[in-house]
Length: 206
Image 1 (spheres, rainbow, N blue to C red):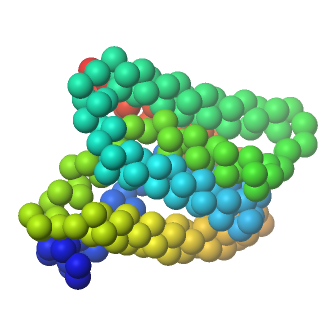
Image 2 (cartoon, rainbow, N blue to C red; image 1 turned 90 degrees about the vertical axis):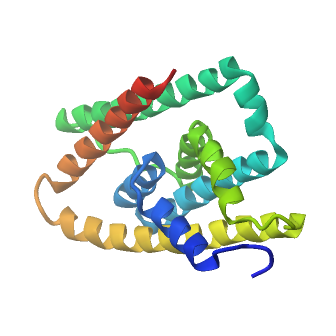
Image 3 (tube, rainbow, N blue to C red; image 1 turned 120 degrees about the horizontal axis):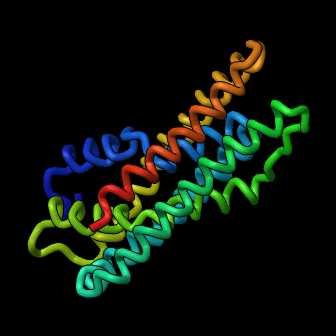
């Protein structure tokens, strides 16, 4: 298709990339579990927009600039670490407030979009992934249209996968809502997972 080589492997690689749990997945599932499908889909849109910006930046060569100026890249890494840590702590703090009798505050679709977008945008490794990923499937004579086609493939497949994630997450959340303490456990796990991701990213910062 166009100048994409190993097309089948290209599709499989995108699906595997989506299936690996990360901060974006947690943001989508958390928004869905707490505020329903509308917030979940808003989080999906935030993740997709963030990924799209990274793909455009990768294609435009900004990743090469970051590699040539490691301090800029490191600053982005630390900002991502700090934001994920802050999100995780906020989830645990909200849980403590709920345990103390304070009512849970619903999050708007706009807020869910913004949170997922920032989670995606503060993960520069996504852009470096695309920089390393795209050339693997480009033919030497590939035209600029091929890169656009590859970006479209990533966006469409990500949308389909993450939409399914919202649907499944919503069903699980509805079933868990009937179980005492299930929402509490889920929120605590999400908060701890985000904190764990931030610690792992911090350990990888060079």
